[in-house]
Length: 93
Image (cartoon, rainbow, N blue to C red):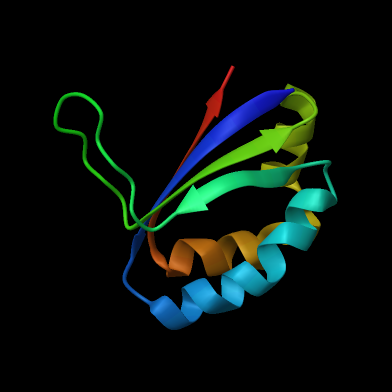
């Protein structure tokens, strides 16, 4: 199992709602899922740049995560996520 941290700064709530309708199925195509997500992240130490939405994604392995982000069939869904505002995803491993 490998994880990815997603942090979104929401400029377009309508696009976020549309993305949420499609995101789970897109992740599942590559064995991924949202482990947890929140619109109220809490800093534990330091002064992190808190996003509007934070999520922890899981994938079976690194290749599955890379397959998800690079899947040409998911280009429109990734573009929709990026249209929300700032969208940063970091693979942890």
